[in-house]
Amino acid sequence: MKWLNTRLTRGAKSNLHARYLRKHRLRQLGVHITRLTLFILLITGWEISSRQGWIDPFIFSSPVRIWTLFLQMSTDPAFYQDIGITVLETMAGFILGTAAGTGLATLIWASPFLSRVLEPYLVVLNSMPKVALGPLFIVTVGAGFASILAMGIAITVIITAMVIYNSFQSVNHDYLKLARAFGANRRQLFCRIIFPACIPDLISALKVNVGLAWVGVIVGEFLVSKNGLGHLIIYGFQVFNLTLVLLSLLIVAFLATIMYLLVSRLERYLLRHR
Amino acid sequence: MSEGGGTVSEPIAIEAKRITKTYLSIQDEIHAVNPITFQIRHGEFVSLVGSSGCGKSTILSLVAGLIPPTSGTLRIFGEKVLAPSNRLGYMLQQDCLLDWRTVEDNITLGLEFRRQKSERTKSRARALLQELGLGHTLKLLPSQLSGGMRQRVALVRTLAVQPDILLLDEPFSAVDYQNKIYLEELLMNVLSKRKMTVLLVTHDLEEALALSDTILVMGGQPGTIRHTLKVPKELQSAAPLESRSKSSFRPLLNDLWKEMER
Image 1: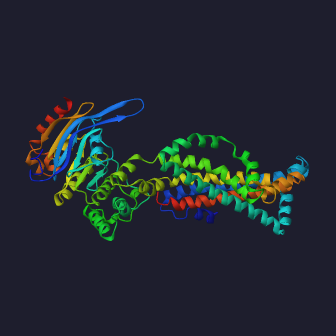
Image 2: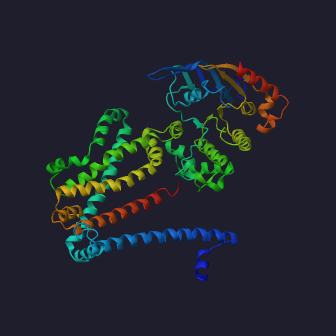
């Protein structure tokens, strides 16, 4: 108990500070313990209900079955290929989609005339469900990697362009006045003021796009269905191996979380000065 | 204004001939400025005062070349203003420091835009920062500075491009009184060492009287110049705080008040 107390009050400057630290750290500890307990309860609850037949094990599977399948599949190189291809497609779709969207926003910003011409097109494209374009991609670029990539890009590019363009326009007008009084031309205005000022919004767009790219890629793999985690999900569904479906889902969730955390890391790095 | 701070022999820095400005939009047209004519000689410190909405800031934007006049001509050192002139420095009420750049990179921003950034100009900017007592902040970010310090950095950024004419749009209105006086003293110090023409827009009559050689009182909507006040020599030569305590200061301030309310 003494050991715990010294740990909780480590770095205290005074008695009052020690009490504050203990309270703060105890609450922190409480959150962690509750989180972990909830996780364990969910997993064991799932396992027990499945074994006792409270839920249909054929449909809902069970943690142990999923884990066994995972161990079994992890010896198969094809499994890693599936994961690798999906990660590659998602990363490429996410990066290219964001870059293309930012490029489009820049183009629209550079020409106010173009921006007004394109406005209704953007609105229509944005409200259209991009997934519905799937068949079109398959017949134009073939049922494979290119189609899935196209889906990942299609789903992110328009919304990125709209958000970033809005952000370009909402830059503090006094900044622009100042730069113009110094004789800045439009190109300088963009590179030195507008773009750097919009980096926080660009990162928000990245965060949203991580999720969207996954949607595009998984749906793309549903349609093309050759390999990848999306294919595993559809395959598992077709042969009614719901354990495979759930395993693939968990892997997607895990990978998507890691990508989100990487973007957060990037955010902290880029915004370290602000 | 010819016998204000600058003498008759000085060239005319800013010359406005019957300039007007009308803002147009789909719904309406707004006459911001009625025909206005004035001349400012090089080295003169002129303030533009008046109630809000009388077109003071419009005049400044016109002189800065940020917007074109609807009619009339505007010349800077005899050259017609078509775009922001290289001889101008412009300072706003907001310090507008870019929060992603260090102080050092902020004060050289104007040099970058004018493609004048070199080791020589950079060290000149650093020397200016030192002169305004902020040499130690070179590597800091704007968020680490107080409001008064930020405004001083903004002043350095404006001066770093070595302007002949300073356009100041209520530069000290956003800081507290003590800092305002301090900034005024700093500005006058800087001006005493360099020959510059200053056009200051302010709603603070005390400030205008303490700093200027000439005060233009604007009024009406659309705005015109209603009155031109020559500030007496004894106030011109006194430092900003000292000037405020001279016996002739209060009566003149009262006169200005009356002009504003007319």
